[in-house]
Length: 538
Ligand code: CAO
Image (tube, rainbow, N blue to C red; front, side, top):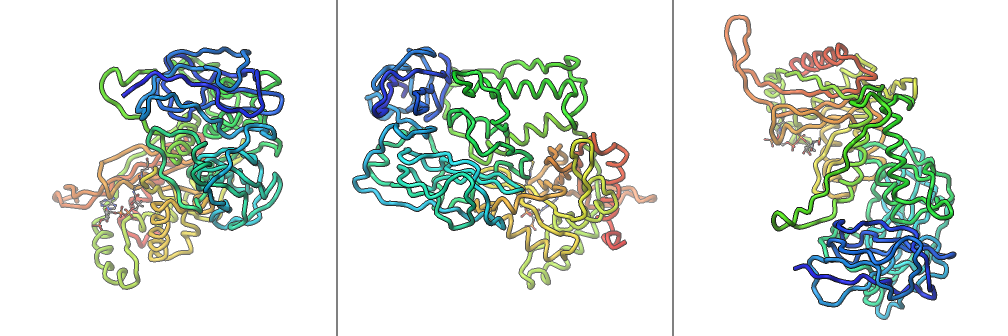
């Protein structure tokens, strides 16, 4: 059921006649519940006005520069799935300096919840580089409250629950470890009543100690160079930039008082793409795009009102998908990929795997083909060190350790846990590590340390099906091995066709670092190693 509702400025405390500094939507846009519609800025506070419901923007009643107060009509929204007839006044989401902004509703029957640093793996004494909420802020569950940055990863700590921030126990520059209290949130009826309305399916509420999602999906993002000071941007723009892996400190702001707007972040990205196409970025792919460099001249993303063609349901993308999507898109655009296909005869290896099954079971592990693949890849990486390297400007960094990542399918999306020191581990050790990490991944309990430091990744779809695919290189690694389902095939042995169990391999590689001949040698070596694992001992 859709219904036209009036979106009005909510209670914004003592503020009156506050200028609209940014419109984040246009008429005709489809918006999700809580998506920012417009931003207000007084001399003391910045406020995003979110949409109270999913729907389509019918009319915008204000323009940049207009001033508004509580109750001003700003947008007409054709809302979907509205339960009541009354228009819902939106509450401001987290706002930048809010010293004098809307006072939090007192929590009549609310409880105080300590928000602590969750399990962050091996990291200790990690500096806080950003505090994203202020006392009095009304926050939704999963709102990022602080950003931590170690030398390996940048991570947001999300609030485990909706409520009002009562007390901040940390500041930028403080160092924290697992269990340290960051802030106190007041939850409960009154606090929740003031929280933003949710009318679409929301992300499942996390358990109290939510592992922070690293900004990188699979490996730490080589970023977070932002100085400790806050960039002048609204929370939604900061979030937008973070999701795209953009260091907001580098984005020039064109809004009033140099404020960074969503359009500025988009323009920044377009500029980076244009430089890549022109070959101007160090380590970037050379020019050669369809336009001959300069600009990619991409068409705008098609905007379709899907509801015109039949019933639809809109759900927010899972957090992991948003983060990994931004990383995959960057890797796909920036890395010239080539995929080399090959097949390994694993008849004998599979017989061996089955033979050791009972013994492995006694040892409490299950050895799958993937375990042997990890061992075979380590041998191949030792023989071809270019595959165990990363680009750093004009240099190649050769790693002398062998940490192998494996793509794991989880209900919330793809993650890549890393098994450390695979060269020093037995097949059973690797099988044990893999089972533990895969379980943690599925339970959403992987820490950033368990997803960082990989040298090479394996993406196995062999347990599911398929004959070949083209995996995306997991930067800053330079190659990834895709594995498909093994099948019995007739193979000519010189005298007759014999049935052999063949395993399809798809090696995608960064062609800036690896030549086609090297890739063919790598997969040939792998197929020989898998055909006779004694080769990995050589
Ligand atoms: N060919 C045929 N059968 C295979 C196989 C292959 N290449 N690989 C695994 N299998 C079999 C296993 O032997 C097992 O069968 P049994 O139970 O009869 O022994 C079954 O398939 C299931 O294996 P598994 O998935 O439990 O174990 P795994 O070690 O192969 O994989 C893991 C572990 C975590 C990688 C996997 O569960 C997973 O998440 N795969 C998806 C990865 C993914 O999404 N990649 C895509 C990334 S690109 O978008």
